[in-house]
Image (cartoon, rainbow, N blue to C red):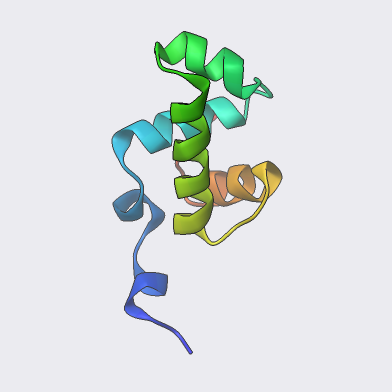
Length: 76
């Protein structure tokens, strides 16, 4: 069954900061490296990554990055 949440564009689901974190996931950086670059704690990044996965309906970094690329959230 398709819900209204399924019909929303990923760009509407993710916050600006989550889009930034998603782009870092594509760079094969560790959560610690992402946190250092964004001036936040590793736990903050970990929470944002979990939120990204939940909102995109994925369970791995590779799936999130692939979804982000298809949606145009990650560009080369």
